[in-house]
Length: 152
View 1: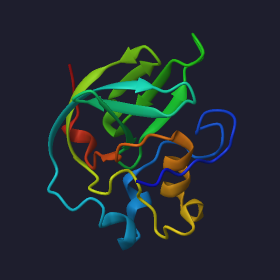
View 2 (view 1 turned 90 degrees about the vertical axis):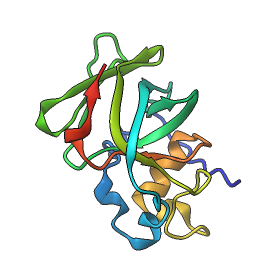
View 3 (view 1 turned 60 degrees about the horizontal axis):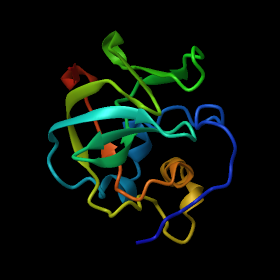
View 4 (view 1 turned 30 degrees about the vertical axis):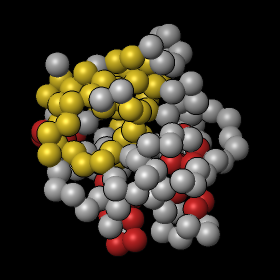
């Protein structure tokens, strides 16, 4: 398994990434990593110490690829308490200790953690850069439809 790391300081939003969204998977070389049909997934949102948001599914952290139109911010009180606003104004909250549990229709990438357009140049696309910065070995999970989110 190849793990890509990018040296940086601050949360992904501070670096101009914003939340990784489904539209970032438009290149066919990226979309092919999500070959299974989406189905119901249940997990807990939490923030890593570097500011990346992950969902823990069956004890495994996965970087989240959110529905288009999703926004996330560090709410600032306390620092490191993130709010994710999905289209239709659903809000999820998390910090390094844990966060909201939810069920939504999604699919885990079948790539073993590496989702890039060009394996020789993983930082040349938004997805590769973001996943490299987050440094999570498990494959990312994509939730394409905000309407499927149910917060427990």
